[in-house]
Length: 277
Image (cartoon, rainbow, N blue to C red; front, side, top):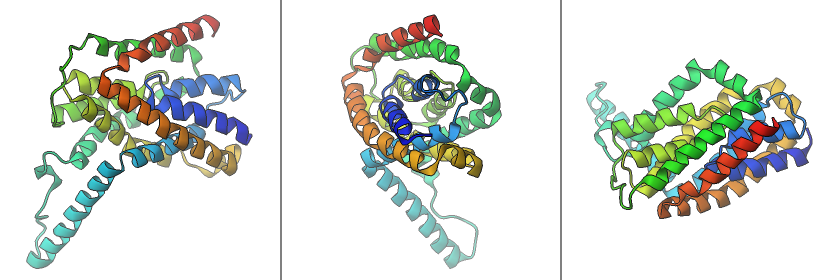
């Protein structure tokens, strides 16, 4: 595979991973246009890894806080065990009701279950352009719902169990190509009353373990040889840079309540795909 092709796909991934227009759907379309008839899941994962870097850079303060919280729990647990010789951990993330770490872990449970149970049938959809067209129209409906939300609707500043599980389920279903992960998770959080900024932050922080898990599952030597290390690297770097810019744009639009701006594009793209597929 040529590096120029992965750079092109990296630009597409960086733009569409964060903008609610479905990165997986656009990758399926453009992979077909440039002649990649067989779905390259390792390539998709490497591009997602680039956007993962963008998430970590943009939300570096949140990520740093989460890492510190986990480290504190681990060190305090070890100290407590050494002092008492018991198995009592002493400190638990469960008691920190505002801990992003805890809610990210909870939200990852339904995502993981959906990924494991429906992995094979959902992966087969990556070869269907028609499915992408239909699901893009669905994505347009999802983000269009935000237009109906009254001003000041979202006031919740804590995530909570129900919201974490619901958003995690939305993320799991977004493995279907054409369904926007960011659109589905952010809108789910907004519908459940989350503050706009918190809905956006939680959506992208929840994506971190999902992307890491997907990459771990898909890496294999045969696929790496088929795609090539250098093209994967170029795709990774391109998606990271473009993704960082797209993430900043989307978060600004989420805060202003303008997520529904992307609905017409999704509808138009979906209809065009169905017509020409």
